[in-house]
Image 1 (cartoon, protein in one colour):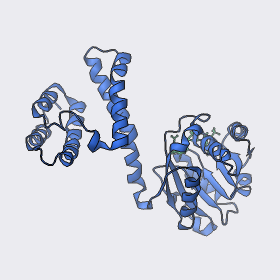
Image 2 (cartoon, protein in one colour; image 1 turned 30 degrees about the vertical axis):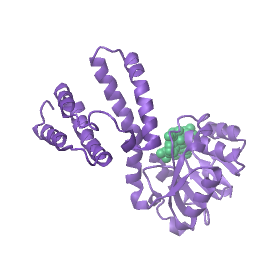
Image 3 (cartoon, rainbow, N blue to C red; image 1 turned 60 degrees about the horizontal axis):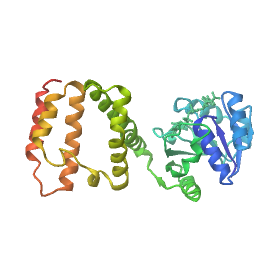
Image 4 (cartoon, rainbow, N blue to C red; image 1 turned 180 degrees about the vertical axis):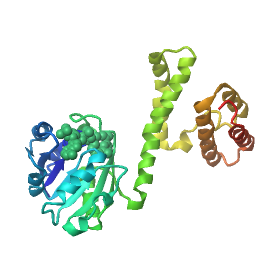
Length: 288
Ligand SMILES: NC(=O)c1ccc[n+]([C@@H]2O[C@H](COP(=O)([O-])OP(=O)(O)OC[C@H]3O[C@@H](n4cnc5c(N)ncnc54)[C@H](OP(=O)(O)O)[C@@H]3O)[C@@H](O)[C@H]2O)c1
């Protein structure tokens, strides 16, 4: 299988390098700018192509590692060429293979292959991608192939249904982007308490990292601590009195989610008073 990349950015560099390091045949790169394609070819010791047509002719599988907004445009060009029997993949988490409109008529097959990983560097991320969990969605005749392909490289892989792709991607947003939003909320509250930004980040670092590690290793139920888990209604009431606006709204909604986890953890503990408090706070909209 000769694998080519259209889009020499962070993911293109990373997957290409990762594959060549594992002796997978990478035919090379095409990109919007020839300079990026050349750089990727040097980095991976492969070739670069001046046109998508040439890349397609030299590859059995073509990964469209372009930004999500460009996948359809690149596909619309690619489908004009002879791609019968080839597998066309993109790496978007939010999009599925339906973006490859009319692929049936071309004789090619389409898949989406998403690394659950923050690929933030063209040159460094390949070193950590072995830890990434991959999800694969798409053409039946290829999902088993790609599952085995990435498992052989050492990655855990899950095949997911097309209809679940957006829901799946929202899970990734909860576990990464929203956590960044919550961390920033905590920083802004500490700024109000007289910390400077650097001091606030430093103060939260240990708490944040240790907690994340526990949650990731043992699951939220085991890792959960704090006033909600203890059913400490008085403390939660004080927090609600001290908070306002968006922060108070987030506090109420997440507390409700935590009560559900706490109830599973301690079925013998009574959370009804706390639930009532949160319900009233939500209804009254006080200070929001
Ligand atoms: N970064 C992540 O953490 C991550 C994780 C999982 C999945 N993904 C997915 O991976 C895909 C690529 O993301 P990325 O982070 O690698 O983006 P990126 O770093 O912005 O790279 C995209 C590359 O695509 C090229 N490009 C743009 N439009 C093009 C076009 N019309 N034709 C050919 N090449 C074009 C650009 O090349 P030039 O340099 O030549 O202009 C750019 O280098 C996206 O679908 C994204 O959702 C990203």
